[in-house]
Image 1: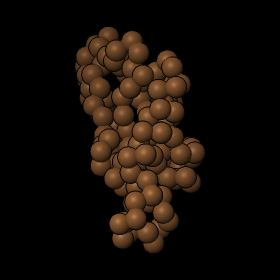
Image 2: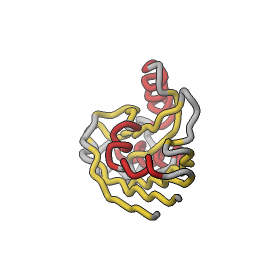
Image 3: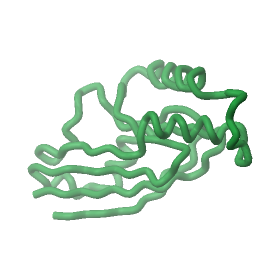
Image 4: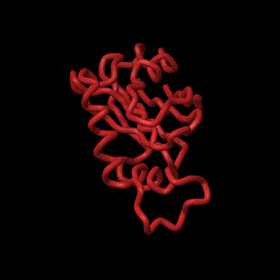
Length: 138
């Protein structure tokens, strides 16, 4: 079975946001699959996807603090026409990536017990985000 859906994620403020349940709500068909693979592609250059801690919200705020310190407010950025948060957002997106592939086993995402899917919003006002979900399985 192949399924592909383009969805729109609601706008979120800058930060790291758990979106696992939101993604699963768009692909109830995975419950029918014994094995397979879900691929997620975020169609943006100023946000990213990551797989990380799903229980303690301090991890998400610490991630935001780390990446802010790493990439924000550098005097040498030339690309500033879309705002001072845009070039740092591009750098963070390159570092974290914009796609994930997750196995499906017995109708569920085969992730670790403490893993969740993050939307990493790197712009102060990034707006809604487009995500392509592709499911392949049997």
